[in-house]
Picture (cartoon, rainbow, N blue to C red):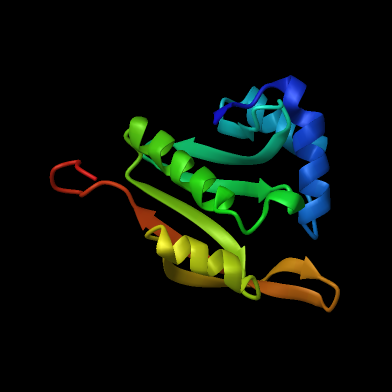
Length: 152
């Protein structure tokens, strides 16, 4: 994986629009880049962007804002690899814990996050829009460093 650049936004946006029910906009990605968030892309040897993620650090915590894998690349472990890289990037910045929200119906993503060390810490009622109106979000957290000695 490598740092996302402004030149990557078109390809990232195309993936986002194809795989997310309510995708981020170009302005969302531009803001993430402009504000120094941890923005990464996974690029094939051919130069094609296969996936991406954006992590917003705040002091010693961070929130995983978005993660996506091109539809043709799904179910191959790429999402797991991207998530792992983002958690390592967070550890590299001495981030103690990472939070995220996920649609309560997205069982595959919830299973992925659990397998990476995330646990459910709450529910946000009606957080996501959907065809039926709204859907709850599961709030999850992953402890990256021990409070006592700062070790992962």
